[in-house]
Image 1: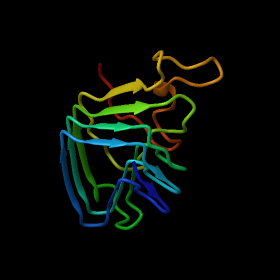
Image 2: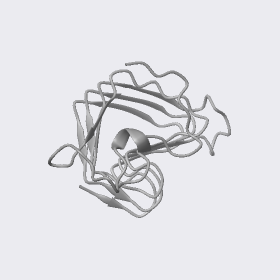
Image 3: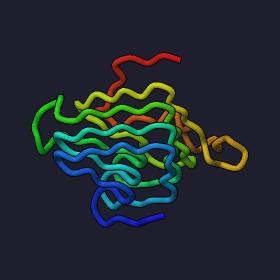
Length: 142
């Protein structure tokens, strides 16, 4: 558990950074701005495999936030996951913020961390709030 005052409470990958995260857990992280779990900016290469990001919060992108504002290029960030689990409580905001940055996320598992696995009628289920406004799916398969 960690608390960040800017972006990337657990992991902040600056421009030109490289992250290869395997079999890891990021739990209960809070960032004041972007990416409660992971924040990535321009010209970075990120790979996350068989890992869990759980109960993280931020103003934008509770679990993961990517921005190419530094490099001003849609291809500046290379972001891939395989077997990533996002475990989100009901009532949080968007889980992913990634405007104009492609994300490859095969095997993504999205689940609610609520004890009964569901959300109340006043709260949206995690799938309905997966993407921050401006973040679009290019291809989605089961």
